Image (cartoon, rainbow, N blue to C red):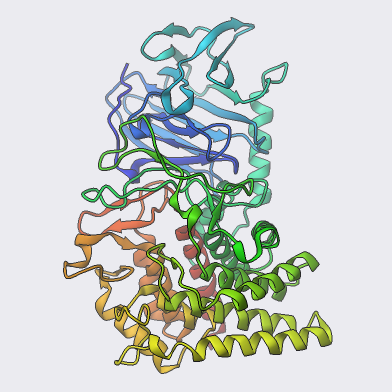
Length: 588
């Protein structure tokens, strides 16, 4: 068989997801990453990190070239192999999703000649700890267990157990025909009967059709719509959106820096919600507001930076058995559980205010806004870890994010809350003025914002205050900050977060794609649409065939770096497309 354990560069993987979990597909047709049953569960397929466990559908003829594409507005992926004949494998996680049961659909299609493929299922729960056991075949289906997980595999009745690869078989598909494989994985008892493939495909298509708008009114409509689909695929039924589908994909190969992003960051959730709001009212905006409001009302001034998708605390970091993706060790959990990040209160207020402007904020949302304001009032002078999750410091961005949130919430409160709203608005605006007035020691001698009272470096996050309304776009501090970021933190059309030390920018980390979109938003807010469009186009090119973005982009090696896909980058693409489109329409 041609299945290989060779890891691939990140740009070559495609994502299938249903909101409750996601899988990565390699060019050879191997699903090399899937956590079951939930995002933060142990991986059942861990080959991506060098562990055992994968599910492969691979052409029998090794002489082929690979390609692939998504059905528009969905995460239904088609792996495509061209050799003597063309073969496709249509792949999806079935929707609507059950948080306890994965339904993985694979349809092998012989496009222009008879197709022959090799198939191998090696389910290994617990990041590879548990082999498949209790194997049984009945009525054309294989059933068994892997640790705490139960599985049923339909469409592979002729498969045979293989000590090295699990269950293996070869399939012949006549020209123009197809063959369905359906894999169910659950932490509970499975239904009595296997799913009907055709019904599952139809239901999945319908779910995507109702979840993702056309985006024909936006520039880069195809990419904007795909960003919607990625964000929907990363968003659970609770409304929580994971930061990424994976853990432990390195941000810097030589530094071995990597993290677990299979959790819901409040900040990322707010960025996504603001992107949806920029395009108009949408159920995905409601989902973001619901999750953020629930967490604020639950934890108040003790709001954590991130949670599991069920709203529980993120577990502490621990090492895993697999050897890890090249350049990094495998780990689960995240140290963020112990941090205080002040800016999330400001980001939350910006989200809630955006929902209010679209008349999509209910009484619960307003209570959450009041709670967030009270938390800012109590804690705004405290040091925090900041947006980049570093050492505790009086970070300028954190306080300006709160100013922006307070101003946005004050403007939104005046109408729907009547006289009480006007009183609250005055109080919230006064608090914003107080915080801003206290930032005199955060202005660099050159007139721009600096990172903190003691850190004089520029920071790309300081583009946001003007974009979000903390200060005016034409404020001299905003203009000087934009110039400094452009002059000191950019390379070849990409933007870095900040200068770490005396080394060249690319020697310390990759360009931060989120910051590239912030540069586009800042230029757009300032009325320079041609430059904004240049930044937008350059940064949206930093992806592979599946149009998935990671957190960082290695400008010199032209490689993706970090976990895949990074939700806030897709959110930034969507928001930038929406704001550029609105500015274009408003231009005489």
